[in-house]
Length: 396
Length: 181
Image (cartoon, rainbow over all chains, first blue to last red; front, side, top):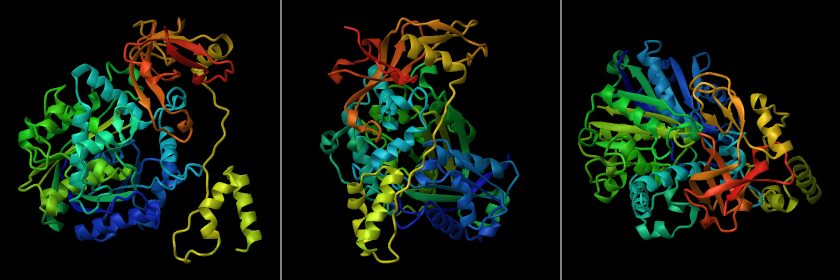
């Protein structure tokens, strides 16, 4: 396998609604920024990988073909990836394979998502219809008719974890929400920068027990892109390449009843383990300078501390209590604000997280810069109770 | 658009998408009155819809037993003995075809939560319990929403029993669960 570098990055703002852009126009903005950042013309790209999650959100099946056309990349090979919330991470993995295999030298990996074009006219809001569109990705025969949502699936796992280990407590979850909303205040692309107190979170309305309003991530529209290049090309065109030194992936049984338990996400543990092995990391808290974890819900961020081996299983809640994951802590988590503060534009999310880690490794993260950052982790998960998991280790 | 054209627009969209005219009027009155600048983003009603005559394939008997006989069945692997509900035609470990096994219809809540917010299709039912139930005699979990007067009554470990609806359609929702007591 060949070494693979990220040589260009770009992202739109993450917003609740981009009323003045379609999905392919958002994709265009992110791609243009990434090409400009890499200092290359679009024609230098050999292939593209598009991470686009929900066809209903785009109001279009096979939306990848229309993005490809709009970007003017006709006749170049491309493939679309759809792996639920992990779509962005999964797209990066395919892009990595394109370049590492020697098949291509330069590959555009772009994630894009709309969502708030869906609408419930009676309630005069998008959210219940967004959830309805998402629920078509639950098993249509047995799960969809039960009316569960992505939040209730993850809530079941968090409740099961709490029953076994006594955490995460509602206070610990609230602290994660406060942290991520606060981190978002320093991120210019973030959707929900807010200075909240633990009490604000605890007092927000119940959505799915134990998740209150501020424990949930946001529905977001946006696009993010990175340009991957082989070592030879990277060294010739880039003076600040970021290397993908570790990559791990695992896909669990989508019907959680077929798993040994639901209080831990085994796919996340395996993805992290493989990524660390490849990157030669043995002590993640000591060796990593920052991590962007998939905080679709505060409780699952805490479970992710365990799944990414920042602590022993069952002790995730300790890391928010002792400050390890705060901006000034030993291993800051979600300096971007994460999905809770920056937003969750599903197909773009894993690529936005990668953009964020690259900004820190390049020393371009402004106010939220992790000083001296050399190595960072991206965790991208998705599907029913964390079916898909992808982890990437990035280094400068 | 003049007022006759606007009314025709509302009528057409109502007939095509089933959106009540008053909802359409609320959302589009300003747009149709011509107040918005030509370059402002233009929103329109739309819907993606496909109608099915869906085959349950190898799981057909499960749904026919549910509809005709008010009975729950699991699928057992003859090699490892594991019983699946939801059923499956093949064991994913042994790759053997499974055999039908009648279940008693009782079970235990393995994990549960209360939904206070949900999709357009279910939002009028909140709050409701969403749970994984392990049916007695099976080795897997069934996702279900539970019909109870008091959502706090359902907890991990709660024993539940199947209740069959009067009108059964041949869908998993023909059965629901309530606490055994």
